[in-house]
Structure formats: C-alpha cells, structure tokens
Image (cartoon, rainbow, N blue to C red; front, top):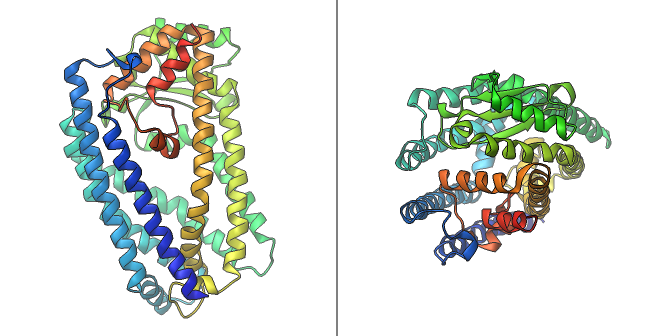
Length: 411
C-alpha cells in the first residue's frame, strides 16, 4: 500500500507539472492571434509589441521556475529527502510539536532561500526592463526579512496549536482546530489593513478635495456607509496600480494605490471604486469568506483521517509515522482534489467580477468603467488574448475583452 501511495504522489506531481506547462504553452501561442474588433485600438502598435515581449519574458521565466521546482520535488521524493530531514529533527527532540516546528521551519526556510534569486530576477530584471519596478534593493531584502519574522510570529503558534490538536486521541478535535483557525482568519480579514499593511507600506487618509467628495457622494447614493478612504504608497515598489476593499462594519475601508490616482482621472477612479463597492453590496466578500471557512473545515476533517493511518507517513519512506510527514503526503494528495475546488472558486470569482462591473456600470458610469479598465490594462501591459483554457483554470478575473463585451451590453 505504501508503494502504491508513493507512486500516486509521483504521478500527481508529474501530471500537475505537465498540465501546467501545456496550458502555459497554449496561452503563450494564443496571445499572438489577431485581436478581435473589440480589442483594436486599446494599445498603440508600439505598446502592444512591448506587452507581447513582456508576456514572452514572463512565460520563459515561469517555465524555468516551475521546472526547477518540479526537479527539486522529484529529487527530494526519490532520494529520501523527507525521511532524511525527519531523522535529523528526531535526533534533536522527541516532542511532536517541536519536531513539526523544526521540520516545517527547515523546509520553509530552504524554500524561501531558493526563491530569493528568482524573486530578485523578476523584480530587478523583468519588471525593471518594462518600467514597473520602483523597489530598491534595501526595500526588497527588508520585505523578505519582515515576511520571515511575521511568518514566525503567526505561523509558529498556529502550527504548534494544530499539532497539539491532531495529536489528541479524540476523533472530533479537528472541530476545535477548525474553529480556532477560522476565528484567526476572520480576525485578519477585519484588521489586515490596519495591522499588517503598515509593516510594509505607509497609508494615510485621503485628503479633502473633489475626488474624496465624488467618492463619498457615490457611496451615499448607493447606501454604502463609508468611514475611511486611504491612499497607500504603492509606488514605493511598483508602477502598477491597484485598489482594494477590506474589513467589515466600522472597520471597513477602501484603499487606493497612489499609482492608481496618478493613472486615472476622477471619474474613472470613482468607477473603479464603484466596482469595489459592488463587491460589498453583492456580499461577494462575505460569501467568499464563508466558502473558505467551509473548505477549511473539510480540509481539517480529511487531515484528521489521514494522520490516523500511518501508511500515509510510511509512503514517503519514514520508519515512524508522524503528524508532519502525514501533512506532506496529505498536501500532495489533497492538492490534486483541491485543484477542482480551485476551478470552482475561479469560476465563482469571475462571475463576481462581472457582477461588480455591472453594479459600477449601472449605478455610476459604464463609459468611465470601460475607460478605466482599458487604461489599467495598457499601463500594466496586460495580455489581451489569453487562451480560454488558461483563463478557465487560472484566472480569478475575466480577461479585459470579455469584461468590455459585458459592459457594452449594458449601454
């Protein structure tokens, strides 16, 4: 049985890699097709050529990155990397919580260190080449250090708690883990913008003026009680623009990147914010959180079944079953199942984006929203012709041309 599970793991990893590369290849070739009429004129010829080169550079780099990750994982599985690390942590402690912390901490640190050169290349070569990067090397490495510290502060207590829960003999202890981790998720959804974001970026309330007045006027018109509008210094890292909505009740706030304010005029900015308010009015955020919590419950339940059977640990070649090895096996096997859940979530997310676009177009201005989406796509050198299969599997937002078609039906 252990051998069967091991080869199932190998087969899943190979299938995931080949299917991802196949879809990426289709996407890379499809973008070279002639634009349909609705896409003509969005880019000028020079910028469209740049966008094509940008996509080509990203494709080549992502292929290299994915291939290296694939080789490392196969090597680690084939040559006993997990049992080797397991033996090391067992030689240091017999406490299951400390073993898990050392095991996952070592894997996480190794993964992070390996990823640094790739992140550096994307930031300081590819993004720099196309004028997007605004990050200094000091900020780049400080971000990494802050992320490590934050992961340790949050991750260590959470992992320790989960290991303690799942080492309990009770078959229902997974319910307690689900409750606590779900509460933790909700807490960060409420306070992410006020607790986490300031560690990396400066936020300040939007200054009084015509833009803030226009935003408040629209919010009042649609019955959206807006207590806080913030501007974040996104230009500290990238020329790309964004906006997001966070929190609930008295803690909800809209956050605009300063780059967004620089790239769009007042009417277009309000249209973008109308889209974000549309997500709230349509309860998209609440529904997504509920779905995530239910998914987490299913994950914890299945994990509780996995760790009760030592065969899933021994499939990776270890002599003594443990929580941390079971999690590795579970993560790979369940990852195959969760791919289908990810497909559903992407379909659902794209549907929500269409709904939010419809809200902004009908409640504010279809013309302003269309202009804003076009400008953002051009400024970000977005791919106007992604392959439909690639969109179906990986896109959480509809491609620009599909969004424009839907908006124009409203006119």
